Length: 535
Image (cartoon, rainbow, N blue to C red; front, top):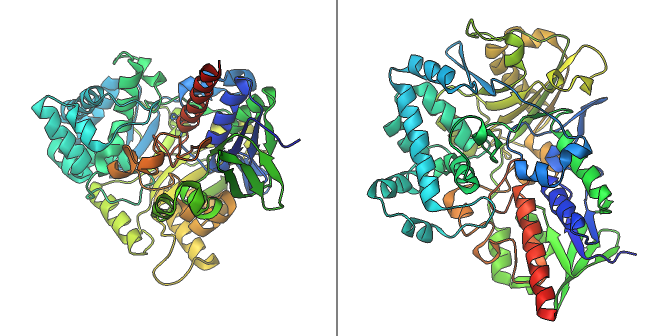
């Protein structure tokens, strides 16, 4: 009864995407998940009694191809198209990320005369570089040396060096004038990374959207770019981010995918001919000629594979990858929503509150926050990304209260002066609320319930190793031809029939579904070639 064509280890959103594509192709597929609920950080979690929502707060990154090809709308997935898409406060005044470029440009020029032109030129230069490098998010990229060889223009060579070898700080300092515009791009490039902006290669996060745009061949004007993966905002899922997982689960069931939860896989089975299946903690075996792992590669190579699978060298190198996570979760239930401070006069307060908010006001402050976290000190000025999901998903609470969902960064997994405990967790959580109150005055007085989750709890509850949401740093040396290792960087591995997927593979973390889609494509291509050889 436990014989399948493909077994997928890990029921996060990428594992479900892989399974849905393979099930749609007519294969017998099983997804084996250790937790009682599917979806990982993107799935629903009861942070407060009777209040379930996702850990993730990343609207707009889900690959539109996944939504279209898997017909997720037919499985209940709907989006609210926010405008503006983001709000970020600087010196008491709010910047709003309108979809209308002219409204954005006027704000940039208020930061510094001519800043809009400088900002647009930087973005355009990055897009030109992305087009010349011919990197696709839908295919594993080559190594850095081959990428450089694809360039012929001297100016693009210089920009390549600045982005891939220089630092984010260096790039922004030479291209922009205002601290505000630099901070806007710094938060976009770094997000969850415990990598200071002074680190070589730290600007590469700014290339993901140019890669998506170039690969899709989309027009570079109007709303066409919004439909490209990682470009702008796909939208806010109705029902919180967990609605993505609900739709994927329903899609999988439609294609007769077996979904098994509460079953930790403890070993990948293999023999002389290749992979044979998996065995769970209870000793139950699921056999298949093809197995896809969508869990953190460090956990996979350290705990589920033995030296004989691919050799001790690959195993030791992947298992030794540093995680360096720093995620901290804040969920607040409030009896009413505070007004935002510093909104421009022409902004509708309700529309602004429905979009994502970001907290992080200067490049220097970001550098200090991350550097302190690397030394084990929780930041006094935590960087935060958040949503008020009840504005677009009113059914998340039974009454008139609202939920504010915040992901804070730079809470060290291993504090320098002792482990996380209730007092330390509460202190950092309240510090986050204090910082949020600069944008939302009077916030603390409106809180009727809350949940603060420290990095160790996040690891335990959601399976995120060391609270790292991207399964490892996303620097050039970790991304191009080497994620998670040069020998397994194309979703396939030296072990016949065994594949890797998830945030630890190209193009990295965040809720895109792209790694899952790419892995499914690799499996189906191999099956097609095998069938042709046999014919």
